Image 1: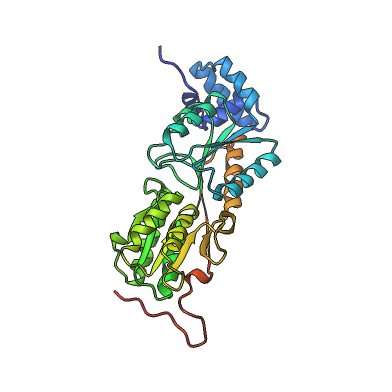
Image 2: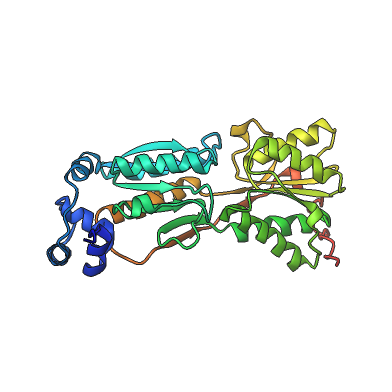
Length: 345
C-alpha cells in the first residue's frame, strides 16, 4: 500500500505543502476557499497526518529557524537582526544555528528543524548543489534562502546583485589606473562566490583587460584563506587587490602589513562587505556595502507569508549593493583636469 504524503495532498489541491500544513493545524490565516480545497484533497487521498508530528507542529508554529554559514562573520549579525525584527512583529521567535560552512553540520541542523516541526527556516546554504532541504519541504516546512542560492530548488531567495557589485568594484580599480587586478575569491561552490568571480571577470572584459587565472586565488571566505591567497597573489606582482568578503579582507590586510606593502601607495585595495571597523580593520578601506538588515527582513517577510499559507510562485528578491570609495583604492587624485587612463588590452 502506497503511503500518501502531504505533497500528494498539496499537488491535488493545487497549493504548497506549507498551505496543507496550515489547514491541518487549523491556522486562521488560511482563506476559506483554500481550506475547502485542501480538505477535499485530504478526503480524496485518504491522507492521515502523524499525530505526534502534529503535536510538535502545534507547539513550534511560532518558531523560525535561521541557519547561517558562518557565525563569526558580522555580515550575518545585521542580517539576523532584520529577520528577528520582522518575526517578532508577527509574534514569532527566531532560533539561530551556525553550520560553519560544513555540510554535515548543516544537515544535522536541518534535521533538528524538521524534527521540531519549526514553522519555517531561513537558510544560507553551505553549497549551491549539495545542500538538501527535502527533510523540510516534504513536511510542509517552507524555506527561504538568504545570501546564497540553491540551484534547482523551488524556494524563495533573497540575495544581493553580487555580479553587478563585483563588476563595479573591478571597474573602479581600472579607473584608478590598475591593470593587474588580483582577485581573492570565495568558495566557487556557492552562488555568492561564483557570482562575484563572474562580476570581476565581466569588469575586466568591459575594460578591455585580459582575464589571467594566475591573478585569482581562492580564500574560502575565511581569514586564514584570505591571508594565504593574498600571499600567493603578491608573487604575481598585482597593482590592485579585490577581496571577495570581509573575513578574507582581514587576512589580506594582515599579509600586506607583514610584507610592508602600503595601500594605495604600493597597490590599491577593495573589499566586499562594509563592516571593516567592526572587524578591527582600518576605516579607510574601499568596500562594497550590502543591505544586510534588509536582506534579513525581506527574507523573513517572505517566509512568514509562506507560513501563513500564501501560495505564489517562488520569489527571487535581489537587492543592490553600494560601493563606498575610500582612500585604500584612490591612486588617481580627483581634480578638474584629472582622468583615469584608458583601458589597455
